[in-house]
Length: 138
Image (cartoon, rainbow, N blue to C red; front, side, top):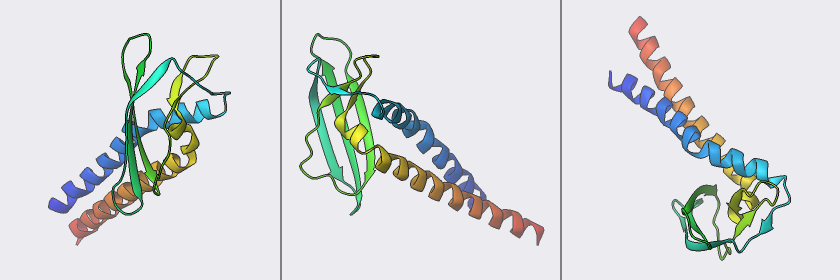
């Protein structure tokens, strides 16, 4: 029973990582092919990048419109260390879509991180589920 619950939890965690990070990765992937330009219409009000476990880094960036309005928050989870990176807002002049240089410059890294983490959790969950099913037959 415990293994079955753990299996379901792992599969749900795999789905949650895709649901949480997938949309921002897709948006930045689509923007990476555009002619993005640095912008002064947004100011970086908070930018924190931390290395979590040897080679896993997370960055939290908050952008605030210069003319006032709602803040935009970006969360990135990357493989490798970020050291001394400058973070600045970028905009697609055609659509006015806003992102950061970190989001676009590390898009391949972010895609790999999402695939590796969600894939690992999914395989772990399926393996545990297979163990439960095979144990129930015996």
